[in-house]
Structures are given as C-alpha cells and as structure tokens.
Length: 76
Image (tube, rainbow, N blue to C red; front, side, top):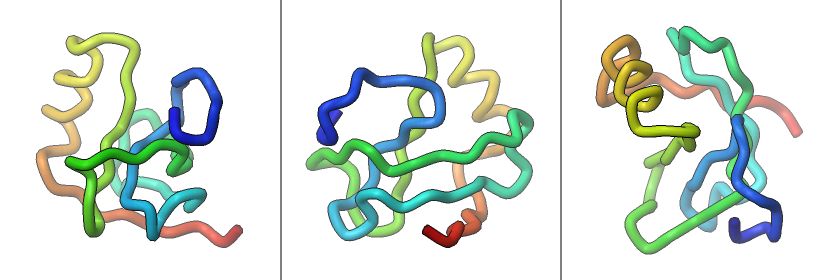
C-alpha cells in the first residue's frame, strides 16, 4: 500500500486529500473502522475503495451495503 504496509482488513484506498483518515461506513455489517492507507489514480474525491481478502467477500458485503454508502469520519 502507499503507506508501506501489507494490505489488510480495515485498509482502504482514498484520495490523497483523505490519506490517513479513519472512518466508518453506516450500515456496514462488519461494523469495522477503516483507515485510508492507500491511494490510486481511480480513487478521487470522496470515493473509498475497501479491501477484501477475496472477491466473493467483497461482493457479498456490497450486496448488503449497496454501491453508495454514508461515511462517518472519525476524529484522529
């Protein structure tokens, strides 16, 4: 990842402006806190790219949350 860590649960890719930001996704069935630890050319604005171990897990999660979700920014 852009921060030098190996990708892991709770890691997210975000825009450079949001790098390091911690957030929650309202309605997340995993009730996980995510941290913006990676970035990329396809991740801009308020877009968040959540990492999953495999595509099936990511797909199942997205079926519960939807394509667009409300994000709660957490204090540093």
